[in-house]
Structures are given as C-alpha cells and as structure tokens.
Length: 113
Length: 115
Image 1 (cartoon, rainbow over the protein chains, first blue to last red):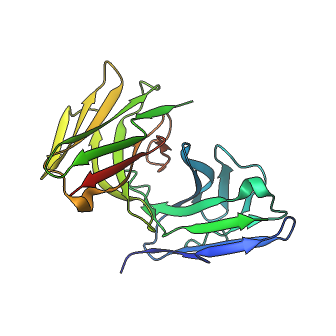
Image 2 (cartoon, rainbow over the protein chains, first blue to last red):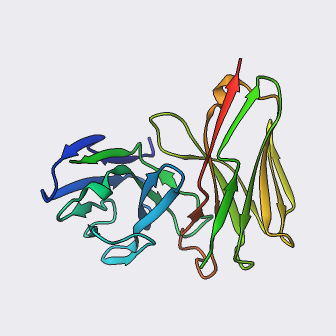
Image 3 (spheres, chains in turn orange, red):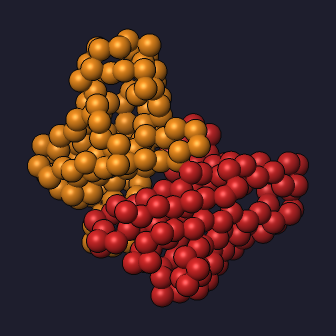
C-alpha cells in the first residue's frame, strides 16, 4: 500500500529538549515536504526536498532542520523546541514528473511545554 | 510570492444542501489548483484538481470552477452528506514551481453537514 508514515503520532516534550519526527514514503517520490498546521493559518511549509541531499527552506523554517540522506526518509529535527512550535505537523511526498499531487502522512501532534 | 485566501473559515449546511468554498490567489502564473479534504485525525487527501487551461471539472458530487481573469477558484459540493464533514483546503502551484511539487495552501474551511 502506497503511504507516507510519520512517527510519533503524538509527542509531549519540554522546552529545549531535542527531538526528531521521522517520515518515510514507499512510493519512490523525489519531492518531500514538511508542513505545520495551525488554526486559521492553514498548512504552512517548513522545509522541502527535491531529492537526496537537496533541501531548501519553505515559508516558516526558523527553529527546524531537515536532512535527506535517503530517498524514502525525510526527518524533521527540532534542536531546541520552544512552546511556539506546538502544532500539528504533516509530512508529504509527491512525484515531480506529474501533477503536484501530494500524499500526506497522518500527522504528528507536538506539544512543547 | 503566491498568496492564497480561502473563505469561509467555517460552513454549516443541512444534509442534501449544496456547499461552496471559495479561494483567491495572487500569482497569475499559477497553473494548478488542487483541493484537499482532511478528515478528523488524518492527513489531507486530494479530492479534485484543475489546471489553468480548464474552466470547470466535475467528479460525481464535487466540482471545481476556475476564473483565471479574476484569479479565483471554487469547490462545489452538491447533495451534501454527513461524511462530507471535514476540513477542506484549496491550494495553488506558485510561479516557478513547475513540477517541483510546491503548493501554497489556503487557511482551510471546516464544513459541517447536519443530518
């Protein structure tokens, strides 16, 4: 089954404690992206990657890092989480050869205390 | 850069009625406009999309219309059912994105269909 898998689904942490949210896709997609969803603001792109070792900032990259060492994985790293990073996070992937159809993971709800 | 505005933020309709959600975009070079549906506890999922060379597209009870001159596009759901209750997002593919996959999303509309 074609899917994007995020882990964990729920995470509660404290300010300053480094964390990683993993994302993996099994569709051999080149393009992967991280979004955060906040009430009234829709989906805002954090970082994206066009392919292995190619990453770039989205619209709200401050406080986040990513890496793309393998095509299927695109982890999101928060080196020093702060309460304003409390949000619902989505990973998405798409093939760059066709329409920009993005396939989303189920989401990770993060609370930073 | 591209900016997408979506209205209304919430919409409540009776089962069987129609629902319309509207979006406007700023970049006249945008050429791809998808709509995503997000059910509770799940990630957004594509339900319909339209390219800039088409004015309208239908798929059963849902349709999307595009007015390039006015830079707005709309989602129409007819004969609404309780399972249509969800958050809907419009999006636009900004200039220069080509086949990169980049999309700019609207703020979302929470649709409630009352039985």
